[in-house]
Length: 349
Image (cartoon, rainbow, N blue to C red; front, side):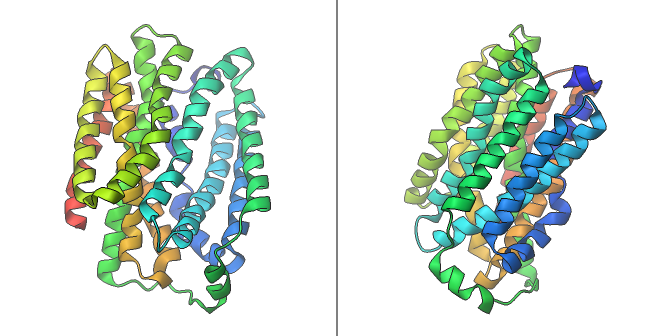
């Protein structure tokens, strides 16, 4: 991408974060769209936009067109992410919600893991445009699956019309949702930085592009186990603060170590294990503090924090590499963010 589009690491970091930037303006309206037209219809719209954006990016070697396609895909992802989280919250409100959320979040590392072992090889054999087309096809497959299979919980389907639509939060409710959103943002940005920039660090150490991407994909494959199992374990322990602080501390230190140590594989394994347990707990934080009639706009606000911070901090990660010339610089930033998350968690509690 950098060679064909003529961009530096700063612009690459902007592309990485640009995917979620539409969420700054779409997250809250997306909640109201879901209330008006139904969650299923909004998810189908989101998957359609993701497919359209993937195809747009494959049309030409133009940075402007890639930016446009990236934002179209991102707008679709915003509608998808927020609605699916609400759908899970309603299906599992009185059951194992942390575990259910953890299984939902597993979809992200599954996609990243599959991408890292297939798309670099596909791009080298054919072109990076072929990789974009493949992701569009998979979005269409998801659209078909949701259309055919998903149904709303009976209670929600029966009560949707009776629910009021308003955005009036209490001051403490608003503050708590914003703090929860900041924690989710920092956690995910640290995760995004590793598959985004660790391959470049490994290439600078002598690995091939495909070998580096495949090694970093270990992080995502391990998350397929550590997310649901970690969520279930955290729920059984009943000590969410202990789990979050322990994992955040480990993730911060391991990010520093990945930047410094010549043997990355065991560090990536440890990161894959520690990224699992916090995800479901963090996703439940806004559910803990929101009244049921505030859940739709509240989840939109929760994700807005993430969408606002992701583009800025991933771009900062790229700029830190350009400014220092050190491919490890973004990983130091990612590690630091985990310690900031601990401070915000303390304020939330």
